[in-house]
Image (cartoon, rainbow, N blue to C red; front, side, top):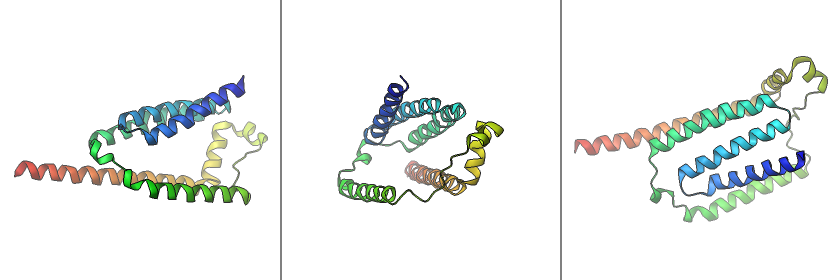
Length: 175
């Protein structure tokens, strides 16, 4: 039974992830992303990580998705600006090289990152939430900080794009 639930949740996650990057309408992309976030939370529940499931729903499905919707509303994407037909060969080349690097790293015996596996005694002694915090801020501090840097760059990019559009619109009003 648990395996069937896992297969369902994992399949829906993969399908929704593909739909998130392949659909043409931005609102449909966000809806596919929302569906994926809820199913990832279901996977966390299967792993007995209820805290992560709740954080997944509150932070990602709540805050991050609302941020995406605000960016979509501010950018006012038009259908003509989303044509990517000339970029497909470059995207396939990048995807192939990333896939080759991942396969090479897996065959070489991992990525050289810490496993993040806490012994069962540590989890029972300090609790699930505290062990997640200890692992996140000790073993995975660098990836955590890099993720925050990527989010900062994305936010600054959205502000620059919006400000540029507002300046252009303001200039047209004065003319």
